[in-house]
Amino acid sequence: MTEVKIRDTRETRIQLGDTQSEFAERYRIPFRTVQNWESGVRKPLEYVLKMLSARIRGDLINRKSARLPKYDSLKKNLPDRRDYRGAAAWLKAVRDVLGNSVVFALDEALMCQGSFGGRSGEYIVWVYGDDSLAGYNGVVVLGNYISPYCVEERNGLRFTDFNRTIADSFANEKILDMQGITEAVSKYYFTNNGSFDGVSIAPEYQSRFEELADEAVNYYDN
Image (cartoon, rainbow, N blue to C red; front, side, top):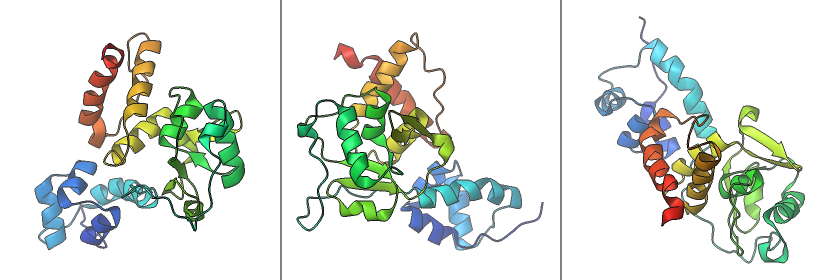
């Protein structure tokens, strides 16, 4: 098998915001292999590069968020959640401000799916869309592009499907309140006859999902 050069493994990893160990876990590559690539001791084989390329391109576009936005008096404000009866009415008002092309993610996607009721004082709004949307207080832009295969539409609202929502929750777990996703996974389990059939988890999140699944199954017992 012919070897090909990777442009710059270290630069790509830094753009993703990963440490070497996080990059290795994300793509199921041995940690020592990542070290060897970056030091120039070895180069990835062609078939490995082809398998990685699509995933890396997508992950560079749809990046993890590093921090939650704080209120900024210079930014515009979204409709106040407390002024609306029901999550759907509020999300439609938010959509009218952000534009019809916006794709809701994470907690807002779960609200669109009907698997999480949200919070009365909801402030953070997770979306996929143009970076200009971050000009509104509370908006977190997870990425500028998302595959249409990961998007559903209901009641005029566009949102990430359940599997993509789970993946996004793990990617942003350090800054995300996991109550919503835990509640949604619990609801999925009990409405599907005690089964997680149909849930597809990326390999790098499989062990974390198993932990979450245990929490979700016992969610209403706590």
